[in-house]
Amino acid sequence: MKIIKVIGSLCLINSASAFSPSLCLSGTHKSSSLQADVAEASSDVAVIATDPKEAVKLFGRLAEKYIMLDASAGMCCYSACSDCEYREPGGGYRMADQSSARPKWIPTYDHRAFGSGKEHTTKWSTDIFTDGPAVTKEQFVERLINMEFVPPLGGPFLAKSAAVIDDESAAAALFDILAGDKEKLTRHRMGKEMKVISGGEEGVTWNHFSAALGAK
Image 1 (cartoon, helix red, strand yellow):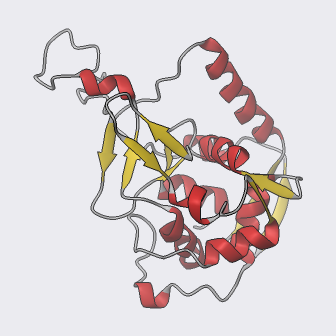
Image 2 (image 1 turned 180 degrees about the vertical axis):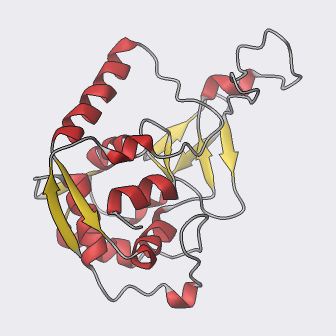
């Protein structure tokens, strides 16, 4: 796997959005904070080249079929009201949550709960952070490799039997992307960095993920 240091713009932010709903952030502070994170990541980016098949082996372990989005959107009646505040400019709706037949998103949150009673705990938060809020690189790689693979939406198709990981370099590179120069990766930081990779969306799609790992 090649890693070349470059100074330039962050390619991840221009990845295509996977959601019809747009990101709904409460308040200028959160928006400014996310923009600052993106700007900081943009200033010094490591461009990584990864075999797409190796990248999809990771994505199929981390991605999920269900994601929770905007709690307020659950109040919409979806009756095409002309003045509906939950309609998107393109004609779609902001959704409270979404489901897919195959794993499609790596949620950027570890756990989310709505007042309606819906809640969701992500695979990565339970399968990687099994005994505490932080992991070393060795623990991250080992636990990621041992997660169950399900053929996801996006990337080259791999059957479960063909998704065994023999080369750990892609998993190690993902740790470096998420942890930066830290020796340990915390659950909070993983969610925060996933948010940057997704360009501010609630979940990382294959387009985002493959761009981060240079899987072209």
